[in-house]
Structures are given as structure tokens and as C-alpha cells.
Image (cartoon, rainbow over all chains, first blue to last red; front, top):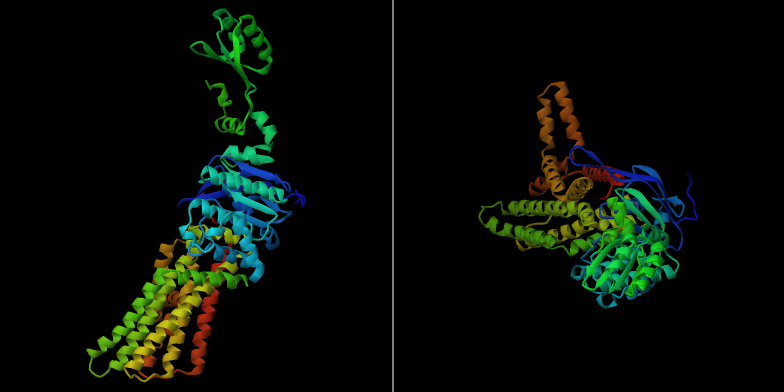
Length: 321
Length: 253
């Protein structure tokens, strides 16, 4: 396969085998991974802890070398300094030079891109403003909370106004407000035309943010596509009905259509096998003169798909009471 | 320019490191205490102050080179700060050289401070200050550069603790390599060959020691001095080159 310069990220049969311990035991972290990230999209890279997300991102950032396979950024080789100049990276739970103040910290990274003097000063102020850290510009990083570190970390990744922003677990360890701020920031980056690739094991964030996602498990790609398509795939297509005052005869008619019936006094929850049963069920309820309280088609979520892939079982909503 | 930015950042890191000041204070105390000790000797007190003063500068400088030097790279890897540097348009060798240069600047400033301390003591005790003293100080600084490169080399592939032990061992061995040659002279051809090989491979740090010259008012020719400096520079370049090779292939995980 040849590199495609229309793609921002492209990997082909990417694999990484680590040798661990004294005897050099082989551990496969990533296996035969094919990924494509297109310009301007927010791409979620999902998987449980230890699935190989960070390893893949580190390969793309030139921090580790792949055992086999190829990868390109902007259709160019990974080590290329010109490629790195168009890139911003926030590592997972970042530790930074804690003896620096935010200003010095961002200034240092600016120097690495050849930014100096007034241009750099302006850029640093803009970024501190963007991530809401202007109040702490002269505070040493050692005094920062985790959320504050994450914010200057993001500012650091944006110092060169990159075309591609890669964030490794940007939401982990943040409180709900911090997570919302990071989400808003990612959306703002998308609006300004940047491509964002981020990894996460928090699926809700991906559902809200991403155009497309890839899901990996034990180093292998298990699903990849548009979020809505994948959510439909994960959906069980079940329908939940809540009914009051249903007669025992009515219930007997209803049972064959239902997957599950839960009684709570006079009220019952009926889970229908699929949407095809809805018409029949409503007919029974009407003729039994019972009253329908609610009718909820069960929408799929990435979580359902995820858990199904991870456990090899069907979605847990089938077992939910 | 990138190397310089990293060097200046490293220098700033060192300046904000408490370890550095502790070592510096102890070095200055040692130099100062030579005045007290010299009271205990008869005559010879010039020699004692010079010997102890230069010895302290050497010893504490090496401690700084080792204990700050080993942290240069391994700490960056352990704390994962290196992730953000290597993903920027910075080649790995540039990172390594920047780190090295940064600590070299720190050591230079430290050597100057310690030397000023010694000069102050010498001046106060009315000990004549000769040119040889400055040559000795210059070579002590060259030795620091070699030791720092050794520490840097080890820290590219092992943990901070192991590199400290290895570097300290290299420092001790480096001052004793002449014994290897003497020892080899008494052995058969094969053993002598092996010992000679080790002798040439290890840094001969005793070459940088001019304490005896200062204390006993011996002279050293300009060409010898240049040769020693060239030796130190070549050895340092060799160490840095090897470190870059190892560092280039390394996975950061």
C-alpha cells in the first residue's frame, strides 16, 4: 500500500511486539492495525485499558518503533521533522517540567518550533486564555491540580497551531466540569478545521464528540465506522413497555411476545423482543382495558457494542430488569 | 537553536534543584575547612590548602556530574516528560546534546563558584596563586565533561540508580587504569593484550589530575596540556556518539 496524502493518519498492518522481563517474553500490544483518519474529523480511538491505544499513539508520535507494518501522517513518514511540525500531542496523565511556570513551560515548547520574542509571547497568552489558565500563568506547575495540568498540557499541544491534534485519554482523571471543558475544547478545535484523534475508554465522550470511532481490543481492531452506524449495530432493537392494571388473562396473551416481564404491584415492565411485536402488544393492552404508561424503544449505545465485543456476549440490556 | 533551548531549560532545571545547592554548600565548607586543618600541620600548610581545595572541587563536581547527570535522561523517561519533546520536531540526538550542554553549563558555573571560594581562602591565607592552579582547574572541568558524558551514556539505557552506580565505578576505575598496565606487564602475552585493551578503552581520568603539579610546583608543557584536553574532548565525543546511537533506537514506554 502506498501512503495517501489525502489522509491525516494512515496505518497498514501495524504491529508492535514488546519483549518484557528477564527472558524477553513476547507480548503483542498491537496486531495488524489498519486505521484511516480523514482531514477535519474528530476520531475516537476506543478500547479498554491495556488494549493497545497508547502504544498505537506512541508509534504515530515516533516514541516507539513498530515491529512490522507501516504508518504515515499526512502521507509522510513518521520520523519526518516536517510531519512533526504539523502535529500536537498530549500524552496520557502527563507529567511536565514542574519547576517551570505555565508561561515558561509554553515558552520552552515554543522555542522548539522556532518561536521567539513577541510572537511567542502573544501565542502563549492566547493559549493560556483558550484553556482558561491566564490566572495561573506565573505559578509553578508543581502547584497545579490534575485538571490544571491537563489544561496546560493541551495548550502545549497547540503551541504550533497544529493541523492534527492527538490526545491520549484527555478526559481521564478529570471531574465532570473538567471533562465538559475538554469536550468543548475539542469541538472548538474541530470548528477551526483541525483534525482531532483522541483515545478514551469513556464511551459517552466519544458518542457526543466523534465523527468516527475505532474500537480496539487486545491490540486488534474490532469495529470502525461512523458513530451512528456503530450504535445501530450495538442496538438490541428491544422495546420496553410499562403497563398498569393488566388483567391476568391479558398477561397470558402478552407473555409469548415478551422477552421478560417484571411485576411491581399493579404495574409491570414488559420487554418486547423486537419492534415488530409492538402492534400486537398494544392491541392486547387495549382489549384488556389496561393503561399504557410508557413505551421506550431501546436505543443502542457504543457501550452496548463495546461490552458485547469485550465479553463476546450479547448486549446487557437483554438482562436488564 | 533547539539544542540551545533544551540546554537552557536543563540549566534552569538544575538551578531549581535543591541537590545542587546542598552539594555546593558542602564543597565550599570543605574548602573553607582546609584553613582549620592547616592549623594542625607544621609548615606545609600551603600544600594542604591547595591539595584539599582542589580535591574538594574535584570530588563535589563529580558528585554533581553524576547525581544530576544520571537524572538528565532517565528522569525524563520515568516522568514521561520526554513524550512531549520527542513528538515535537526535535531529533533525539538534539535532545541528548541539549541535555548534555545544559549540565555542562551548570557544572561550569559551579566550578567557577568553587574556584572563587578556593581563591578567596588562598588570598586570605596569603598563599601565592600560580598559573598552574588555573590549568589544574581547567583539567578538572574537562574531567567533569567526561564523567557527565559517562553518566549520560548509562542513563540512556538503564535506570537512574544503576547509572549512578556504574558511573561512580567508572570514576574510581578511571583513576586506577594505570595499575591495569602495571599489572599487565607482569602477565603473559594474552592477558597483557586484554588488560591493555581495557586500559585504552576506559577513560584515563588520572591524566586530568594536576594536583601534584600545583602542590609541588612542577611545570607541564603546553603541548601536553593541549593533548590532554584533546583526549578528553575525543573521549567525550565518543561517549556522546554512542549514547545517541542507543537513544535513537530506544522505545519510550
